[in-house]
Length: 239
Image (cartoon, rainbow, N blue to C red; front, side, top):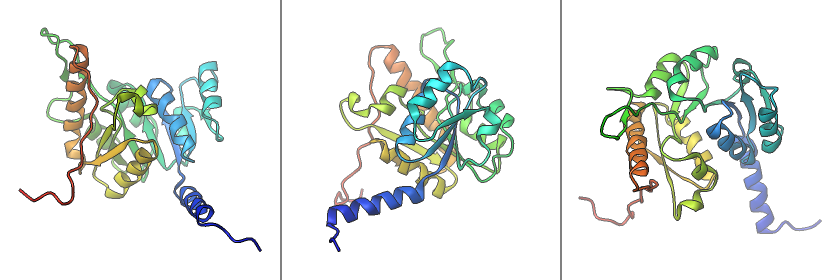
């Protein structure tokens, strides 16, 4: 009987762990964000079903083919049936209504990368368009039995698939009221080569959405950047 090397054993352990953690993820929307994250999630071993208003159109079927790994496409309400996670890759101003249209989402993790931005300010600087709250909290209210995790809202879709193009590490701040749900989303983020930063409960989602607003304002005024929240060394003295 052949002996299993340490490297092979480690690979088997990783494969087993990935298989155990594999989820069925409904990606609602097939625009830039859905088209970026769906294939990335599939490459990590998750099963992807795209929810589209036009699932049989060529561009959607091309995305299914690009995603591979058994990906499929169907209507939005059908896509969430049996899903463990739901990615709301939809326009921010439509996210609440679309959430309500999906049916019962109880027990599912909803990943919310949406933003609502008011660009009509006369000084050329956009503002957050959910005064006193956040889109994530509105989505949570629309699906009270679900576990909403705000994530992927503070960067461009192109950096999601190619973080190295930013010139250094890229942080993905996340918030949500369910710690286990945050941890599950954080594992996906790590697998993509990005760096999750857990910032706690969902009431801080307005801060993440404001982070996107100032990120966008900086880019539109010639000072583009990406977020990297450098961890403080464990040995650093407390202040």
